[in-house]
Length: 86
Image 1 (cartoon, rainbow, N blue to C red):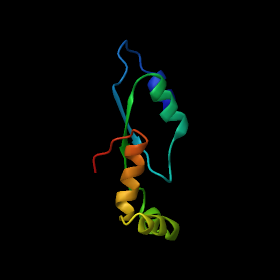
Image 2 (cartoon, rainbow, N blue to C red; image 1 turned 90 degrees about the vertical axis):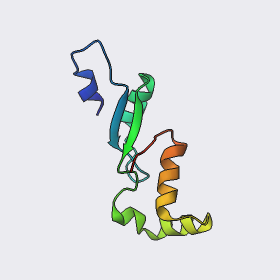
Image 3 (cartoon, helix red, strand yellow; image 1 turned 120 degrees about the horizontal axis):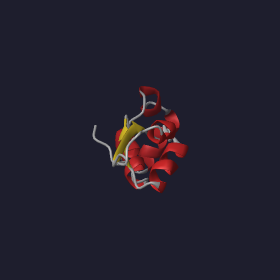
């Protein structure tokens, strides 16, 4: 969260902030805060919860592109400039 970063009593800001980030939970204010300060956001839990991966609309979208729901979720993060290490 941005307030955690603002509370740091240091002259050195973090280079990477690992936060929960996926298509079901995008944390837009935190993403904007980090972008403004050149802090790379790394996606934690990029696949979301099982309810996201098992969602019918998500499955239909994945089928439309001939990919798995996991591939679709990871692609979402990559296209938004958020690397992930699962």
